[in-house]
Image 1 (tube, helix red, strand yellow):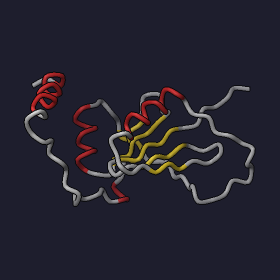
Image 2 (cartoon, rainbow, N blue to C red; image 1 turned 90 degrees about the vertical axis):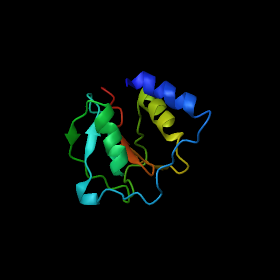
Image 3 (cartoon, rainbow, N blue to C red; image 1 turned 180 degrees about the vertical axis):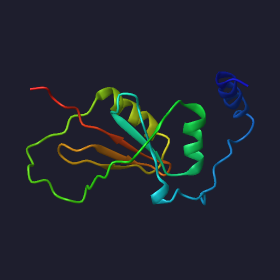
Length: 132
């Protein structure tokens, strides 16, 4: 069965049946086993938190595993006038991805990647760099 056909079948069967909900008790991937997947331009990274979400990514997309950057959002910035800018294209994609979740956490710091966490994944978006 092809992807488009599967999608259409799910859409049509949803008129008859309720979509199967994933178990709330699904194990989260251990922190030491977390791995990231970057886009080809290395602008964003998706870090799956559940095995089912990792399987979803690796089954449906051509992606390559990459090490996760160490980011510390707990420290206060010493330069409050620095402002981060992000790609509108990626922000729109991010907003579309997060609309399926009840809880979404945004972590942002001046001149630092944006980090968005849902129950299934962490999304890291690099700030845009101005060429002055």
